[in-house]
Image (cartoon, rainbow, N blue to C red; front, side, top):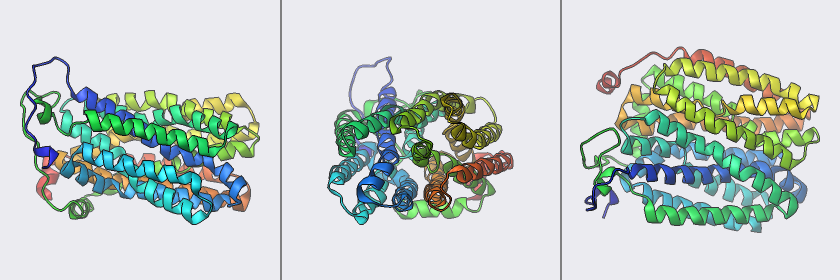
Length: 430
């Protein structure tokens, strides 16, 4: 029986809203998924030393994983609506755990490509930003921006908790022990999701937050694989989609594809220990936790286009500053970069998701935002591979950081070209 069609549970009325438990479970799931996705940045140098693979070759595997992580998003949205959060997350976490458990046995590049480029990319893609957007749409009418910001910030918190730990374990005991800890984390989350996750407020006899009416979930109609493609075809007719996708391409290019993948290695080129470099990313995670949550709050109150203009512009300035900070060999300058850049790491997600919802409507926004995230991951994939190749050719990451800084300025200008749109008008046109 489809979990989405279950009758609501009979229970006494409570002032506590169960949706906050769903938000907590989603936060933890996204946190662990982000922590796992950050692990290859710690493995880059150990794999180079142990297996003799070039930095470009290792980066190509990371690039494929990042790309698939994004491509799964639109289909993840339809699967979440069709089968419910619990089933999809249990399946995804199980597959991810299996791929991690097999990683210590690898000895060839193709095996790394299979486990981390293909399997891990697909599994973590089911737990991407689309999950947070879908949860907020199902469980909340009010405070959506804040919820999306909080759930998006979980990616930064995942780096905060896991990167220094993974780096320390790799440095002291070897990279395989870091993988074992990652597997254990997945098992804990899997059990929690299996016990407490619910798919819709109706299952606990509640109304969405901000509403007083208990309503049944709208059944998903259409083919789970065809529906995302149909929504893509419809979205491509609207200029706002192309502007959102274009800005998000540059967002991915300048964040997880470049800094998330290569900052530790770039710091190593300048003599910084891996654990200390991971600490810089963790510091970014601390400040992005605040920055992205506040961004969600701001997107409920201010023009999302103007927020994106400032976010991309300030990020561009910080990336132009990074080569000077690295060449100075001054820890203080790198700390300044980490704070400044960290506040802006993924603060772009809440206003981008809000613009997608305003333009395309609640029912379509999950899948269409998923396609916008695809553009983000294509940009990230391009940077992950391209920066590794540039490093092999030129012996430095400076050129990649400067290029990313300037494309952020382009994204800032593009954001201001987005016109305000009413979802009803767009839906009628579709």
